[in-house]
Image (cartoon, helix red, strand yellow):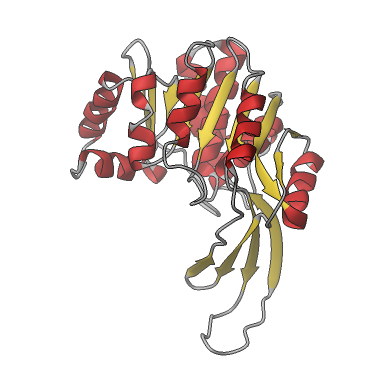
Amino acid sequence: MIYTITFNPALDYIMTIDSLEVGSVNRSKTEKILPGGKGINVSMVLTNLGVENTALGFVAGFTGKNIEDIIKERGCKTDFVILEDGLSRINVKLMSKTETEINGNGPSISEAEVAELFAKLDKLKEDDTLVLAGSVPSSLPDDIYSRILEHLKDKGVRIVVDATGDLLVNCLKYKPFLIKPNNFELEQIFNTKLHLREDIVKCAFRLKEMGAVNVLVSMGKDGAILVDEQDVVHDMVAPDGKVVNTVGAGDSMVAGFLAGLYEKNDYEYAFKLSVATGSASAFSEDLATKEEVHKVYREIR
């Protein structure tokens, strides 16, 4: 079974407007509400691909209930911790000539509610997979990722980490099964500019030396690179297509990789499916469906 954790889920309220005039009344042309959060995105894409999984995390208030209702309607299983106080956040995205975002802060999470999440993690078994993805709200300790990996280190659970900066680096000593930085995050980690694909590969190997088992680097329109546990380098340019929405494309890559690995236990296939899934989501207004993914997969050179 695959589990995902989203520490600070959101409702993304997306509005398109002709132009944003600060200090004036602005009227939208279209509105759309979607559940947000990297782990939730991974869960929804896995479900689209027919892979059973369960979404974990924290939700609060009527907005939290709405988040859970939407993803259940999409076929996802959930086992959220229901917070006693506060509201799950709403992120407002204004789509005009430029994109403007106003992101909510999210509810406070008590130590007792963190313990409730850990109790759910105790149910994970050997060969289960746990995806840790996204930022950590201010009410949680900075080392929450590391605490989870420490808690699960002897259970044989495969851990996937999709995070930035120290949040990712501090997990490496626990030998996570997969990490998925992008090229800009690699530059931040190693404090250097990466101009060549060879430089990105070198950084991926350095992350493996620091503990990562597999390193999947997303590079947007430039495709992706995987250095797998056997130190084999897989390199692929992005398939052709019109980019409509990049939100969730990286999360879709994680879902595609896990779906491919669960299907065939083959890194080359999992890598190709991850690129196809990330691209298919980027070419769509919403997260990619199975049909959209396999259409892109067939077109990859």
